[in-house]
Length: 396
Image (cartoon, rainbow, N blue to C red; front, side, top):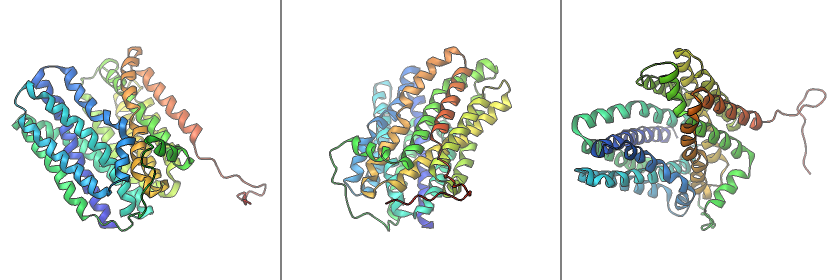
């Protein structure tokens, strides 16, 4: 189990490095080729749009051997990245968009595939810890990879970044072969043609899964909703240079790394619902701290939000892994990703519009929504008898 845990953490490091470097460089490359900031921004949309069809893509993971499918997706992604070597001018910009879409599809399949494979490689008590370590690894790469990718692009151009990024999924595919799957479910789902309905039914059918998933969806959506507000707070309200946003990104990344390292222990002690509530509350506190007219408070708020946001995500993923029938885990995991990340497609433009009211109103609104969700979905306290002992209810 320890060997498998290390392999999955290394897989997260390699995947996070390659994707973070290439996603940033894709936008820069398009901007250099076309001079259009709008086209450069569309590269990011291509990456995230496929999450909306996650329930349909996830069904593939329940119909085919999961490890082989994830390996094949990684190898196909590497091949797609190498097609960027054909980019020579603005006439080949479409290739960068096509590869960005390929990245988005691979994100859905690989992320859901890893979620489905982990219960077959680890004991249930280890899932929370490993999910937290994977989250820390991915967040750490978000700090390192963009700088490395941009530096390599400035030195040797987009082709060099494409080759480096293509090497990452090849290495990941090799590591998947080394993972020992000791508890592979023998049964396969017979519900093959019901689209997202199966995944939604499983996710909504029990409170232990539904609560952390809703908390993660609300918190992640609010993180996108407040992006423009944070820009306004820094540049307009605090009158700081735009480069200060890098400081905030670093603070949030450091908080995410710390949060990922300790969330597994909290999941073991408190359970996914309680950790999801705590994460939503911390994210709300981080939003309110960034409203204060003092830059150290803004930095502290970014760090606090960085702790809380991964807690909601890891709690939801762990709940899905431990509460879903193994034969349905592929499509349920992909549906869960759609529920958590799909709202970003609306939240980001809504936040960009709301910022016309100023930087603080969107942050306060986001904090209020997270606190309302946390208060309404918090786990119920055990009922007590008159003598103070827990009340035991015996079913018929």
